[in-house]
Amino acid sequence: MTSFIDQIIGQARELNKTICLPEGDDIRVQNAAKIIEEKGIAKVVMLGSQTPAEIEALKPELAHELYELRKKRGMTEEEALELINDELYLAMMLLKTKKVDGVVAGSTHATGDVLRPALQIVKTAPGSRLVSAFFIMCVPDCEFGEDGIFVFSDCGLNVNPDQEELACIAIQSAESFENFTGATPRVAMLSHST
Image: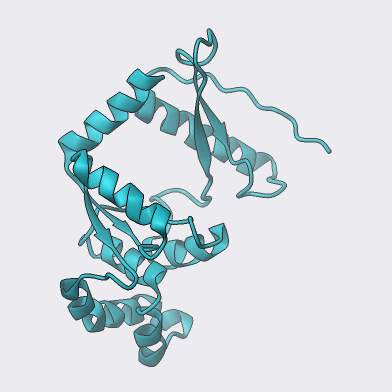
């Protein structure tokens, strides 16, 4: 498993991307950012009380772009100016305007609070009507999966999906597995019961 994690870290180093961490006031996020930067995994932009001055200076421009994106849904310029002070909305606007390459959030915010600005601003991938989630599980000394690597899909995001949604989740998960491992995915579905 270490080799898989090392592979992901190596790919991240090569890509040299900039990742925004909107929950920068959380000590766990601060510690993670320090490790990421020390190991050269990515460049980090932290938001919160330590939001960089150059990001603060972008807020009026980003608020205007947020307004333009959401005005058809009834957002006013004043609401956009207020929302851009929310670290999650600011992070998603930084991503939308390509000032950062990715956002990692959820340590202090609920899933719904992270997804709301993501879906309003970044939206789903072209052709996708559904957002799903997955966990990569690395099981040492396991003969199953791809050398013990599994993708467990949508363990809590889509509650009670219908057959079309299940098919979409399975396809998205298979694509994600292949993207991460380079291996041909094999899909199985487990029934949930209580």
